[in-house]
Image (cartoon, rainbow, N blue to C red; front, side, top):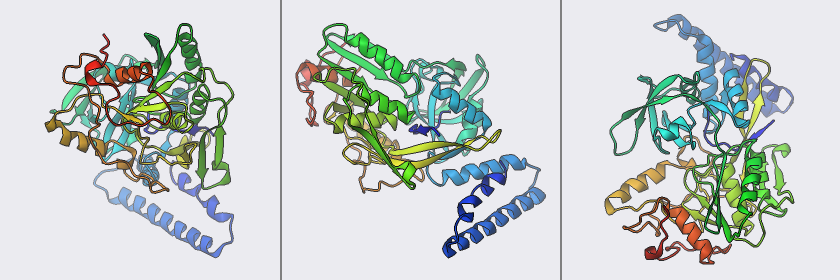
Length: 453
């Protein structure tokens, strides 16, 4: 059973309910027996409702589709990351982990009946069309998807390669508008590397089966010349495989804990250590960039490097998904169930569920005027794990910091393209990228910020 850390989705009949009986049938506990009896009564009620609806509804409907929707509704009521995957969805998820799949290249989640964009993937139709994190998708090819189960909306966005699709975007402070895209085979470039002077830059866009191999190549490229430090960019990285996050962390740690998980069963509680496969020199400074689109596996890596005093974190507070999902196959032609089975904790024992990882150096990407501040606070309050329906509570009582404007913002005359990256490079070159450092003021004086072409 593969462990997932992907925050948002990418992507039966009464037998599904019957599978739950086994959990009650193996015990003679009187309380369990009563629960079992209550479950049977509820299932009888459900069957009666289906029968009466089919007999009396204004038109005939597909019972299988209605029951599948009920299953999805039950799982969605547990938490926002548990869901049923029909056989096609299960196949798509398996393809996604291999690093190649069909679609638009967009990570979405459900919020208040809407399909919300977590992040467009680099180099995909969604990214080229200008779709942004925080956008809401309300219609596909002119047909509303508001209130539609997330899996059904995702199915509509998939289709044959080279086929056209139109999606309606709702963006704050902008009138709704349509975007035309062409479906492609998505082969995302999961790792990008370049040199900025003597500072290496590596961006990881997702955590799949290709990530570690690509990262190893990027590290080797970075080490070919003089190297004063590394910027590891995890912004807008929605997560992926737990195994990949462990191996990525191992490239920067020489053994020791990366993350631990605790669940309902002993098998769900485990400590994961880094391999002794450190590919990056111990003494060189690392700055990890995060934002509110950095989730799950990305947060595990950032949390491990921060707690283990191997890197400093820069940007704004991350998404805050501190749970692990297990994909449970249901048998031939039945699909699978993606179920939250444990919480995870950083090496210091901290749960980031709902709270996110706070940066050591808080730096905004864009400059805000006074009139923007209220809007930014509203957006920040909505765009986080804690804002999702039925999100798990933080079992340690940690809460996300109230929305606020970061102290360090691009100066009015800033001419660069990526202020957070410029500040990360400047921090390394200034010798201030020291683990344990913390400063919410400007990393370097705004007047000396280096603009890159």
